Length: 167
Image (cartoon, rainbow, N blue to C red):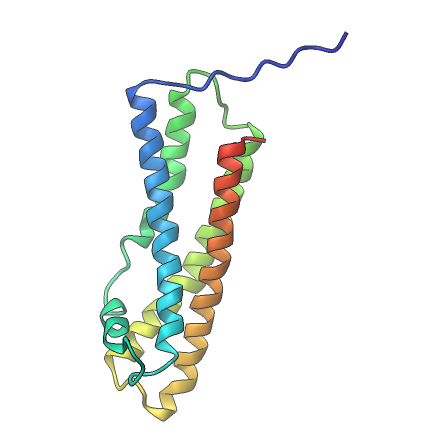
């Protein structure tokens, strides 16, 4: 006779629910902001005379993209969820480990490609946007940010499927 597998009970309670909402909110804001950054970088490649150029310039105003840094709240609230689950989930569970690996890849990609590229785009767009000698580096940075944002969107979908499915 095969052993009977019992699915863990889904945790309930106000603390768990609040932590889950914070975890999801950090993921949506962090990943979502970087995807929007990629879209805006693609729009920046069209140049200062393209429709919506002023909105692109406003988006890339100098400063830190703090909303994107919400990405760092994802594992913090994720581990808090594990702790608040009353033993339903463990840090060694497959979906937790895979989710953490996906998050690590996303964080490295954000730190290596999105945010440095975003800072360079900010500099370009606050200067003489459209200057012929600056066009090539700007186009390169815009492609880098757009491509990295596309990968981040795929990672977000994958992480969402993993967290909901809990394989």
